[in-house]
Structure formats: structure tokens, C-alpha cells
Image (tube, rainbow, N blue to C red; front, side, top):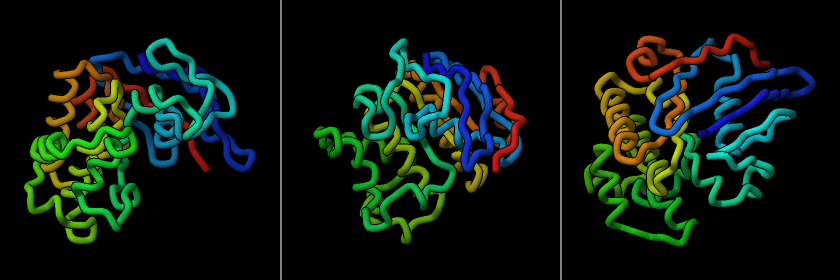
Length: 215
């Protein structure tokens, strides 16, 4: 279970999240909706151990998180993967798509060209695209690479932060299908964040709506 309890986050003395709790069980998809600026992405960063809250706690499969960012134990950090809304701000523009997908494997000392090729095919990337850099591909193709990257270390929990917002309908459907397939194969829990309530109704088993407003 990925669990956040009574999370409070603020910037410049003004609250973004106040007393928010959420649970993402293994094998289930939890939707997170709400208006722009309500703190959905902030909560995603807290759950992925990238942002330490002012108060409240996070636990992953019963283990309480006490350190954040790069100070968090690797086995906890790699249990949760975050897929961003804007892929172009989430990648190094100097890298090829193959190098982007393989980043987590390289960092973990587990290089595997066969796994990268397999994941690329699963998300719908052809071999010729893997040699290209971000400026040479579409947003949809780059987001496919980012999804493949997120899955390389087989996280137990996947946070999809508006991952389909900038994409056409066919690419949206394909990426959601990939996530569902991964979930069925591994039993991973998924937090699906979106403005699109219709998408959440179709995708998630249950949905939480945030109503607060960020600064």
C-alpha cells in the first residue's frame, strides 16, 4: 500500500495542501481529480518522495518514509515511479530516446539493451525512433519513451500525473492500455491524476477529488 496521511505542504507561508490523505492499494487504480492549481501535482511529488511535506507522513508497503529526494533509501525510491504531464521538461534533451529509457537501469547498475528494446516496442516506439533526440520526435512519442523509462525498474506503484493531457486520443488510449497491462502483470498500484473526469471514471476503481487551491 502506498499511503499518505494528513499531508500539509505550503510555499511562501501559504498552504497548497492541508491535511490530505490518500491510499493506493496494490493492483488498484485510484483516480485523483480537481481543478488546476488544487495541489494534485504537489501531492504526486510528495508520494514519489521528491518533496518533503511540512507535516504528515508517507509509507510504502508498511515502511515509513523518513528521508526524501536522493537521501531516501533506493529500495523505497524505486518502488514509486512518476510520469509527468510535460515530457519535454522531464528529460535531458541531449539524450536519445534509447538513453532516456535506459537511465534508471544505468543508475541502478543494471544495463539491459534487450529490456529497453522490449519496453520500447511495448509502448509503441520503433527502432529508428530510439536513435532520435527529444527535439526530433513528437510529444506523444516522447511521452511513450517516458512511460517506458518509468517501467524499467518494475515499480510497485506508478503515478501518472496528467500523462495524457497533451496527447491525441489514440495515443492516450494506447498509453492507458500499456499501464493496465503492466498493472495486470505485476500487481502494481496506480495513481491516475487527470482533469478529465470521463477518463478517470473509465480508468480508476475509485476517485478522490481535491478542491483546495494552490498559489
